[in-house]
Image (cartoon, rainbow, N blue to C red; front, top):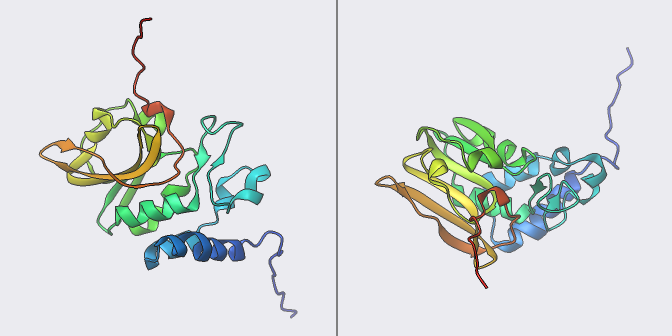
Length: 207
């Protein structure tokens, strides 16, 4: 019997690119926790992009799925996901809701780390109602406001980690539900794609 040895085409093997992402983008920015690095090393970013954008999967900024950043979703920069996972501190007993940015990448990073995970598109999460069943909500993008309908889905003492738009600057932010209330507090400035489904409605202006 002849033994066949399967080899990966070096043109499609991106493990080296993922290792470079870990070493040059995450570790140098203070993301060193093993569970974060292990997940980001294990999940190929290019699998969540259209074929014509796979070549830029490991650049240090967001990749828009459409012609513009707010057209058709995004894959955020690696540093955003690393910092988000670090801030979220996912636990084995967590029931997680992921507000999607359009690719499914964040959900795949989190899935093996938690008890259960559900996803919802950003447009639906901004308006849909639901019970407070989740111990952790993570948002794949930056929001101008946290709707009461989304906060209501968080269990008492549950956590939320998201991007937040403050004075036209995006920041990583985190909060916890206490006495039925959730307030997002900025953690650090970070480049994060904006989820326009969560924009504050513009009021009338008069000349």
